[in-house]
Structure formats: C-alpha cells, structure tokens
Image 1 (cartoon, rainbow, N blue to C red):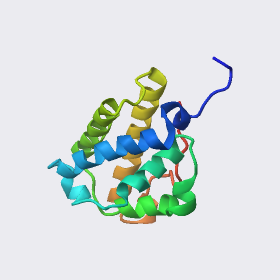
Image 2: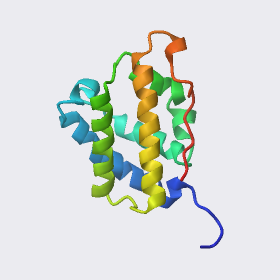
Image 3: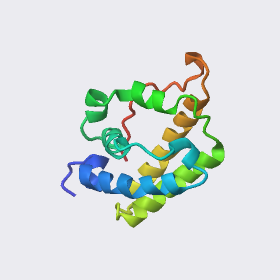
Length: 148
C-alpha cells in the first residue's frame, strides 16, 4: 500500500468498468417480468446516464450533476413509479449478479460499498417513487458520494 487511497471509482476500474457493468445489467431488467413495468422497453441513454450517475456516486467525475440534470433528473425518473419491495430486491440481485459477470473486483471494500450503496439508493428510489408531495421525498436530495 502506498498510503494513497484511491476512490472506489478508480478502484473498480473507472468509467469503462462501470459502463460494462451497467450495459450487462440493463438488458436483464428489461427482460425481467417483475422489473419490466418500471423500465418498459428502455431508453437508449439510460446506460450512459446510469454509468455517469454511479461514477459520480463512487468518487468519479461529476458528469451526472454537471451535464445530465443531477439529482432532479433522477428524482423525476422515479416519480410515480411506486416501486415495490420485491422489485427493489430484484433490482439489487440483478445488479450484484452483473457485477459478478463483468468482473467487478470481489474484495470486501468493493462489494460492501456496492451492497451498502444499492441498499441506500434503492431505499431513496422507493420512497421518492411513492411521494405525492415534496414533503414525502427522502431527505437525500443530491447525488450522494459513496466510497468504501
């Protein structure tokens, strides 16, 4: 160890690794009968947007906030979806399976941070997807920074 900590973004392989992860995961949610109602037939920009979002979350560039609408955009994407607990868990399970398939590092730093963030992020998404007023929204109102 050199004494210099890398961000989780750097540790997992940066943009390329996260893009491979999201590109592998995305078709699985589109094909999944439980998640298809939330994602429909998909959107061409979703892979790039989610890659940028996760990159920012894990300590990479702030592209999602600077160029892609930031937290208000992700809030709007989930508004009214009424995500259920079983859909939340399936989302997490498919994401972790994609992390395995695409070779994301399996060390405890990476996997603990990924699981913890997925638990938190999906909790935020579920709450916001049921909100009928701004007072119902999750207190997290910005792209979180998550590093293991």
